[in-house]
Image 1 (cartoon, rainbow, N blue to C red):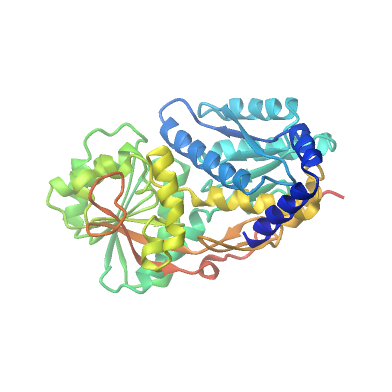
Image 2 (image 1 turned 30 degrees about the horizontal axis):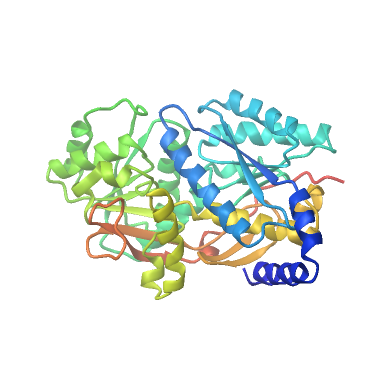
Amino acid sequence: MAFLRSLRGSLFLSAALVPWAMTAHAQAQPTLKISHIDTFSGPTASTGVTVSKTLLYAVDLINERGGVLGRKLEVVPMDNAGDPAKAVSMLSATVDQKINFMVQAGNSGIAGALQGAVEKHNARNPDARVLYLNYGSALPELTGEKCSFWMFRFEAHQLMKMYAIADYVKKNPQIKKIYLINQDYAFGRQVSADARAIIGKARPDVQFVGDDFHPFGKVKDFSPYVLKIKQSGADTVLTGNWGNDLSLLVRASKESGSNARYMTYYGGLFGVPTSIGAAGEDTVFQISSWHPNVPVEDKQPALEKYQKDFKAKYGEDLYYTSILVQMDMLARAIQKVGNTTDLVKIAQALEGMEYDSPFGKIQMRKEDHQATHPLYINQLVKGVKYDAEGLGMGWKTVAKVPGPVTELPVNCQMNRPS
């Protein structure tokens, strides 16, 4: 941050000395384009739209500071409609427009397809390479056995978050019986397997009293599942569910009189708190990189501006802080290299970068291009300064897990360009 402020100051000084030259130069500078290949239509479009707003906000913050190397950033949205094949075709559109930087996350299947396509394209076209910035696809293998020099992930993946949850469970002996329920696809299956292995090791005394999988997005009545949860005596339900599947599950649980708490990955996604409503009070927990009440809890009012500004501009709570971190770190890397075209050097500048962001210390691991950062376990409660989506309830930190707790052994054999 200080570096960019210093840069802006030096640009201002130069402008004061030769205003006519700087004005002409600024007018001649083209924008630095970044393609955003995400899902803007279809059943999961709401998440993609929220992400798009956050990326625009991140870009605006950088542009307000003078841009990068005197150039303003411009986002070029491209709708993959939730289709991996269409996403890969959007990579071709990115190359056709001579865009060197691409942003995507969300669906891990799409992320994997794009990662493979970028790897092949860059090997065949060294003069038209693309750098892929991922703000949070959950699949560990993207920075594990399928890692790529051309892809950086700025958000902790599912396995890292499970270690953070295990750390929380280890320190809370009142958690004794856990019920696992997940959507029946790769991510849900992985959450279940990892919970048993990782939490089971951290707390061998914990009982897993159920392990259900249900069709993705097709269950309209969760009462049969909730009945099994009640009969199991579970005090905690751990779920990777998101969207309507999570909302309906929590509401059915509250209607049944269950007192089980719900530990979630995606309880704070846009629209979910509203959909859950009063049923979420004191019941829903989530793991996240940040939440709007963190600056209040840490007594850092200057940092509240991010939540205030984003809410005022877009009418939503700030959720995807990894996008702000991602764009700031990219700007720093480009600034260090001194140009926007040498992607090898820009990638190398990102490798190993440590960044004291407003949202905690971020470190981009050189060996696999996976970021580590603090994680928060939050509870949906009344009585906090910033509520969630006008509910009269908001997120409160119950545990903060330092980044090093979630660092895993490197599982990456990276092919690096010569």
